[in-house]
Amino acid sequence: MAGKYFDQWNIGDTLEHEIRRTVTETDNLLFSTMTHNPQPLHLDVEAAKESGFGQILVNSTFTFSLLVGLSVGDTTLGTLVANLGFTDVVTPNPVFIGDTIRARSEVIALRPSKSRPGQGIVTFKHEALNQRDDIVCSCERSALLKSAPA
Image (cartoon, rainbow, N blue to C red; front, side):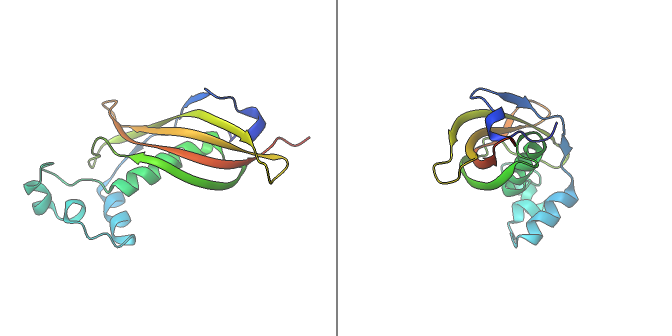
């Protein structure tokens, strides 16, 4: 299913996104180094073993980005004008190499744009869950979407 137009959404609409992703060591290593994050918990096996986690911890900003990416195909693909912001980003449980992440989304707010006729703002609550059904990341995303063509 492609993204929906603003006027096709209703508050309370929920989606279980079909695409899942198993996080690899390469994902974590590349993301951490591409973003210049030298945190030993993400890159140093020996330091990570001595941490409270006992193993490499996946970079939480990768987890956040993956959550948003898993949701795009069903929510805003082809209908997005702009992402307006992300709020309430939390990572209540860790992600480890080998975890499989899936996402779900709920529409929590809708309003027509005051300054852009034919467009509206949809606020989604996105959640990422691992294979044990632990929430590993959640956020709210406000997106400016096109209305359906007349």
